[in-house]
Image (cartoon, rainbow, N blue to C red; front, side, top):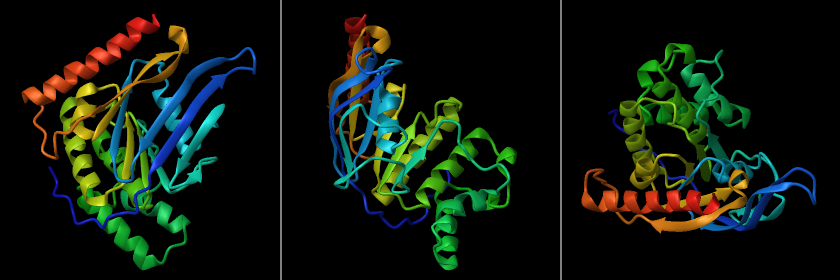
Length: 269
C-alpha cells in the first residue's frame, strides 16, 4: 500500500438533519421515500449509512450534497442551510466522474484552478494529494490508462484538493474487486485521520461500514416496502483506528448491524 503523505487538517464542519423527508410525485398523491430523519454528525466524524435497497441512503446523501431539495425538514452544514451544491461539500460517486481529456494531475488540480487559487497553491495541493493516494508516478496518465481502483483514487484526491469541510461518498468502492476495495478502505481511513474531514459514506457492505466508521447509521423501510425510509438505529463502533476484521468484537458488530438491516426489511415487508 502506498505511504500516505503528510496532510494538513481541513476545517471540518458539523451536519444537522432535522425532521427530514423526501416525497416523489405530486403533493397529496406522492410517495414519501424517506421521512422523519434526524441525524447529527459532529465535525470530523466518519459516519457510514447502511440499509436495504430503496431505504433512502442515496436520497439522504443527495439532499446533503444539495443535488435535490427535501420535501420537509432542514439540513445545515456548519450552521448554514443546504440549498444547492457547494465545494465545501465534496462528493465521490461509484462511477468516478473524471474528465477523460485531462491527465491525473489536471483532474486533481481542476477544482483549485476553477477557484482561481494561486498557482503555487494549486501545485502544492496537487502534489500533496497525488502522494496521499499513491499516484505520483501516474500524474501524466489519463483516466483510460488507469485501473478502476486507481481512477477512484484520483476521484478522492480531486475532492480533497478542494479542501472540503465535508466529504459525501456514495458507494465509492462498490464496483471494485475485493483486494482493491480493501486497499482503498485502509487508505481512506488513514487519509481521514490525517485531514479530519467530516465524512458521510453510503455503502451496502456492513463489513466496510464497521471497518471505516465511528458510527453506523442503519436505515430501514422505503417506498417499495410500504413505509418511508427512516433511521432504525445508530450504532457506535468504538474499535479504535487499527481494526482487525477477524476479531470477535468486529464480527459481533457486523452481526448486530446485519440483524438490524434484515429486521428493517422484514418489518417493512
